[in-house]
Every structure is written in structure tokens, then in C-alpha cells.
Image 1 (tube, rainbow, N blue to C red):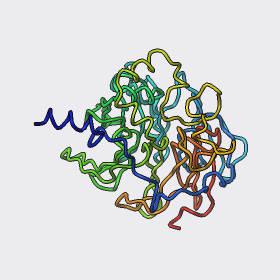
Image 2: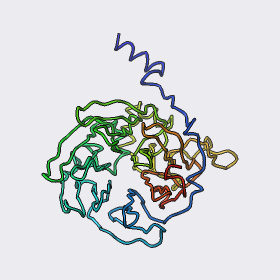
Image 3: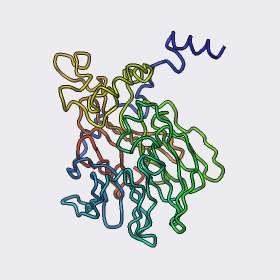
Image 4: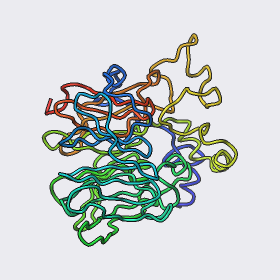
Amino acid sequence: MTFLGGFLDRFLGRGDWSITLPVLDGPLLPNQALEEAETFAELEAADNLVATEKGLVASSGQRLLRFSRDGGAPELVAEFDRPVSALAGAKGMLAVGLDGEGVVICGGPHDGRVFPGDGAGAFGAVTALAFFDANTLLMTSGSRQVGAGEWRRDLLQKGASGSLWKLDLRSGQATCLAEDLAWPAGIATTGSSRVYLTEAWRHRVVAFDISNGKTEPVLEHLPAYPARIAPAYDAGYWLSFYSVRNQLVEFILREDTFRNRMLTEVPEPFWMAPSLASGQHFREPMQGSQLKQMGVLKPYATTRSYGLVVACNARMQPYASYHSRADGTAHGVVSACELGDDLVVASRGGGRILRLPAIAGGR
């Protein structure tokens, strides 16, 4: 009966074979808040953001840069041999994830501690870091097959080889807490043994108890691919997203022959897959008349790239959101953090850091 049910679901396009998507509604109702936000700094490939006592630290490719709270020209903090794929801060310490090379600690009592990677193995795709306490670091690895920068390939290969790790900064011991995760891209602590964890390809956020390994879904059936989680005022969180889902990608994920040929024969920038930016080359997919009316790209058009960051309460329930829609340029918002009473977000697709004044600090 299971085989027959699966066959009927595939034939009728229902169940796991359905390409019906949740809509952006309620607290996720689209707006233009990110598109209208002020530019804090222009920064190519703007990515990880962490607020420190000395200012805002951001990553750009292989560099770590520090900005004053008023913006302006940045100061180079460090430069590495590999792209910075994750970043976390504690008092006097920075944990830096390097794509393909693991994790290194900069500053503080554990300065110089290294958890080395092994290509695309357990520490080769560091996607998120969070300090559990002064001597313990939590890390997510997106995949055992590809690096952190190859997240689109992992999605199209239907990857589910991600993992969650606990790193002891005193002894150097690394303990795997969970495996077979579908691209865990964000992690946040709660003040107890429970942590929040995003699974991008399963479109959900889960609560994971590191003391007993129990997993509980918190947010499911999201209309976008969740990325990093940052702490907010009053025990809340900021949840960022790679991009929104669309029916064409969902359809391709169910058509294995076409999908495998696309991976083999088509250059990656032109895959029909979510992206951090779009509309930059005439060979990109989805530029036809279905997206435009009278030659104008509508904000509600189907899109590969999008900008979205969501404000969540202490129970990880959304109550507000900030968007850059299909016709915008502040796309690929994969990191956000509070800087005083302001929210700053990194638009990797737009190549800049944005500031939304006076919406943090409990407002």
C-alpha cells in the first residue's frame, strides 16, 4: 500500500510530490522595508555580522572588517586563505568559520585554538557558529559532500548530510550532537540546554536539546529557505533567509533526470535554483514575459532571489518582517544583528550593509 500510495501521490501531484507553497502572509506580509533602508556601508559580498564592544565586525570573502557604529571606512581585522563562512562573537573572542578549513578562535583565553577541516568533510562546510558559554562553541556544518559556498548544489542534490557539533575550547574536543540534517544554516542559544537550529532544505526551524538529543519542530512549512539566527533584545531572535521558494524550483527537485542534466551541463550561475541576486545576466533563467507586464518587473513576480529578515519572539514565533521584493536589489540577506537600537543586515546579493534605525532594543 505504501508503494501504491507513493505512486498515486506522484501521478496526482499530491503529498510529497505537491509543489504547492505557503504564501507570505500574516507577520510575513511583503513590504519594502529593506529596499527603503539606509545604507550603512557598501561592501562587496557582505556576509556575517557580529556586534562587538569595538564596533561592527563583518566578513567579505576572505577578509574580516570592523566598522564604527557610525559606519564610514572599515578597519581590516584579519585576512585568511579561505572565505569566511561563519562568525560568532563573545567577550573578547571571535570564532571564525573558514570554508573548507574548519574553525579558528581569535582573541580571548582560547586565542589560536583551531578545529581543522578536511575538505568537504565534517568541518569543511561551516555554516553557523554560536557560543554556548565562554568555553563551549556550537557549530553547524551544512554538508559532508560540498563546501559552505556550494549551498545551491547541495539543495539540487537533495543533500541531507549536515551536522551539529559541540566544540570544547579548553580541550579541543569536538562532539557530534546531530547528523543527517538538511543544510543546517543557523543556530542560536536560549539560555538553557535547548538551542534553535534552522534546516534550510526542510524549510523549518527546530528546537534541539543538547543534553538529550531531543528535536522538536518550532517553525515548519516556511515559504523561504531559513539561514542564520541572531539574538535580539528581550530574548527574541532575528531570522534571515537565503531566498523565497518558488514552484519551478520545487518542480525541478522532483524531476531527477532534468535536475541531474542541469547540474552537469549548465554553468552554476544559470541554474534554475534560489540565488542571492538575480537579473545580472541575460542568460539567467526566469526573464520571460511571465515575470513582466508591459516591460515592467512587478514586485510580486516569481523570483529566484529575495531579501527577507524576520523578527521572532523568545519562542521563535514571527511577529514582524522586513522585505526586499522581486523588483528590489537588497537581496540575499543571510545575516543580521542588533547594533544598539538599530538593526543592521548584510545584503550579500546587493553588496552592502543596511541599517534600519530604532527597530531593535525591544521596539
